[in-house]
Amino acid sequence: MIRYHLAGAAVSLALVLGMPAQAQTAQPAQPEIPQSHLVAGRDVVVLSGLAESFEAIYLEFRERVTQTVGTTRPEVRKDMNEVIEALRPEYEKKREEIIASAAFIFAKRMTEPDLKEVAAFFRSPVGQRYNAMRPRAIDEIFALLQPWSIQTSNLLFDRFSEEMRKRGHQI
Image 1 (cartoon, helix red, strand yellow):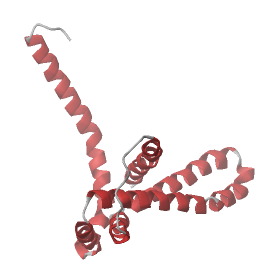
Image 2 (tube, rainbow, N blue to C red):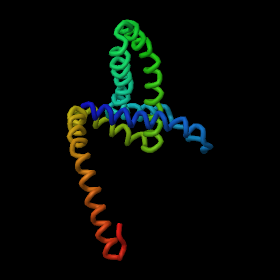
Image 3 (cartoon, rainbow, N blue to C red):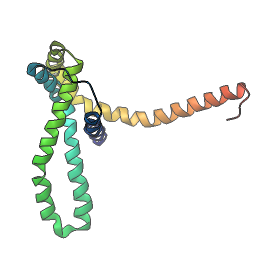
């Protein structure tokens, strides 16, 4: 479950960090997207669980601060917890910004009817079951991914070396 949230946080962080860079570069004006189209995009962001993954950023922040500051400075634990909670509204505002940006991206890339169909899927019983099992499936996939990537990389490098030797190169 942690990997799922960390993966979600990484995606969220990449989106958040990527936005200022986009804003600073000269880009053509974005097309005007009707509000109903943006709402459909937002529905997909929320119903698909993507918005939930953004929550991992705040949870990880709270956990890290609690571990580092709470462990090294137990006398400030009460104030620390109060400040962390007081920061929640600021986080919520930033979360809403990234949800709106993600909704815009979906609306820009998909038609409103398609977004409504995707949202309908996530509202359906099978879509809800998909979302319920997805974190466990992602955990299992991540567990497979590390050894697979190492094994595949080693295999490819060995094959590369073999082919280069056939061509007279020592690697």
